[in-house]
Amino acid sequence: MATQWKGKSRGTVFGYKIFVFFMKTFGLGSAYFILYFVAFYFCFFALESTKASYYYFRNRHKNSVFKAILNIYRSYYVFGQTILDKVAISSGMRNRFTYDFDGVDLIKEVLKQKRGGILISAHLGNFEIAEHFFGELEEKASISLLTTDTEHTAIKEYLDSVTNKPNVNLILIQEDLSHIFEINAALTRNEIVCITGDRYYDGSKFLKENLLGETAKFPAGPFMLASRLKVPVLFVYVMKETSKHYHLYARQAQVKHRDAQGLLKEYTMSVTSMLKAYPLQWFNYFDFWRKDDN
Image (cartoon, rainbow, N blue to C red):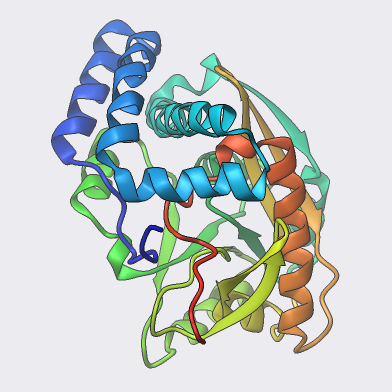
């Protein structure tokens, strides 16, 4: 099986530059066309990711061998599309896409309460484009994104240089837990704090819960934090439905104070419902359900 997630994603700046060149010169369709070959390449030359993806489709979705192999390719292709879409939308081509907002009133209600709120998402769909629409919910709405320094890569720096990035405040996770004070400050300012809850890595605290019929590890921090801060918590996903259409889902979490495990269970049930509806858009290409003695 593939190794655990180490905080890094595959790809090169040069590869992204090729896609951006074709997209801006010949249109988004030309970049999509190149993806057919890139997805095929990844099937054979990103073997650890491919093995993890095969396990996901074959064992967790019970696909046949043939369908699992086909879905590996399709998943790589859709993943590539979401990256290109993010660049296109943030570069001024937002009006070329259509959108459904399912549960957006819940986000508006959070902002009206003036206490801030926490949005927990996952690495499925294209959640990163959601930040380009939150600014429309309310004039003073702003976003703080909880992240790790391992995510500050040359690729991200390049993408930031070619896109019009919204005003997003990055809160870096620190070993001394000082990021908690930044989160509290953001909530006091009635900001939306965005967290992903599906990538545990070795050395960090974790909780275990069932996802698609098998127990997996999840980072403890997002769920401990969200269950203690006494602010509204929503599960939010942005799923790609056609080549030019996205569907934003927002669902209210029922949070009991200091019940991190209960919140995680509700989260995994929410993620499961998304994965059953959009199985190709699970973009955790590592051994998510790995077995060990811990």
